[in-house]
Image 1 (cartoon, rainbow, N blue to C red):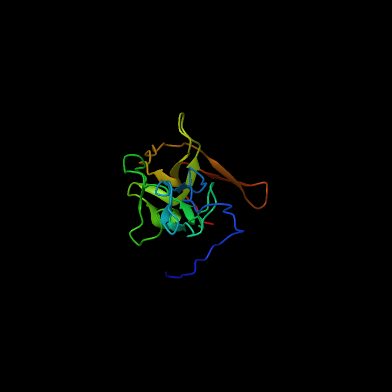
Image 2: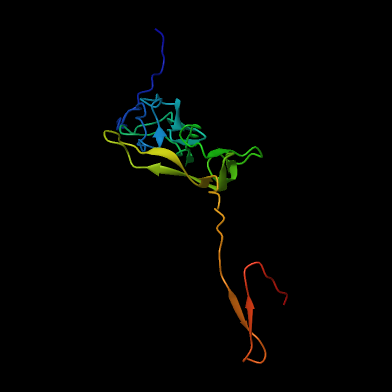
Length: 184
């Protein structure tokens, strides 16, 4: 007969089993974690910024030994900045992009178009959600450029007047009549 040894483990109980990670809890108006449905242990997914925000995506990973049944992903939220789309010329005819560059999101990137005068003041703002929407919308707020208007011509008027200047001594007066002049 053949002899062999067999190891028998005892005394250890399985308290939890390794499970897939659940999606991260995110701000639904700021982050997109749609690729993070259920992530297997050792797997990863991507968390992006959601429009109207822009930024660099971050990677969320599920540990190989995950036992957390309600989460478990290890991740850092991406740094997202509010981003406003540029208006069309029809929407904002007074404003044009600065040919010298600058950001489309602030005053450095804008000038007053021909036919307008002033200094373009621009900033990106998150507006309240419209009816039926959960998240707000981003809009560039623009001011400072005014339409140039033609000047109204002045109508010349003929004025008829006399000027009396006191002379020395005060008992004498000097009278200037129409068509006459004097020097001081």
